[in-house]
Image 1: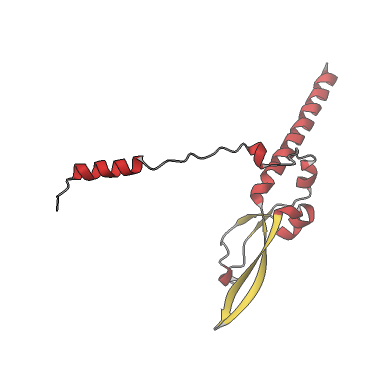
Image 2: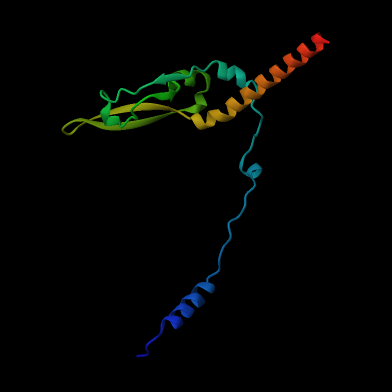
Length: 142
């Protein structure tokens, strides 16, 4: 049996890994991934129909659902669903209410991240209105 030193092991490991071909990640342009890309029009009309809320979950009554405690900011999913149904999803959840007794409930969630482009579109619409009003005000002042 031949005793191999640390240097020989390191060279052998390096030689082994250098013979493995490496693959590189392929870059897929975003325009290839998405289709039917259109600008958001009338974003302000959607946003004006939404009612932001402050609320607290009833964590005492529904403690088994692991709801967050403290002050929350958001929307009531049922209200958002009337305006933007594609931003609301439902999730079934089971929770224990007694020994070997479970209850099923459905929770609705609003996709707040997907609401951001709508909000940006609404801000841009408002800015156009502001710029037009400024232009009119400047023209009437001359």
